[in-house]
Length: 237
Image (cartoon, rainbow, N blue to C red; front, side, top):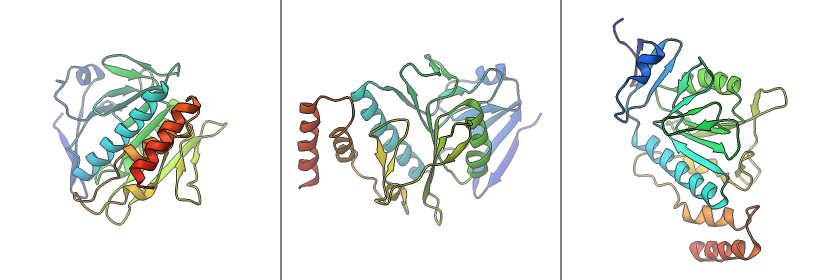
């Protein structure tokens, strides 16, 4: 079957019918390629804004997780086989808890990550907000973030899994801070992601990391005190 190009708001997504085995046989060339419903889905390169947000979140979360030995933080391109026979997605950022339900090897993640983050691109709105939302919910993902930096959108939505296994909105605090449920002590400000162009800068992650580790559960008191002093130095307080 010929390649189908679906263009939405200036960004193309290429699809073609193919088996899962054909998907696995694709060259490892750094492209973001997914497989679902008997189709290979090839995404076009991300914008600089998209890439900056992904790198920032992955770096900040990985530093936090590694210092507390909580599990693994990974980023696309990397296959996540959500369930046997199900779709293979490549989330922008994901967290797998130590001892969690997902299995990680050198080629892929098998099963549902504990936390998935998707950064919306012009051509991925329906995919991230409807298709993947349902897939991650079905697979058993515990927490799902959708970061939408598009002009006139610029919002962040957070969802947690309820007792019945459905995603429900997770509130941002009155102070404008979202506290992660899966990673106690990890927090972000949705305002960080309201970028208007490639020259807009995200915060240096050293300060929010030090602030989070200053009161992170599981760290000795003297180490938390050291991070508190570092946070004061970085903030100029």
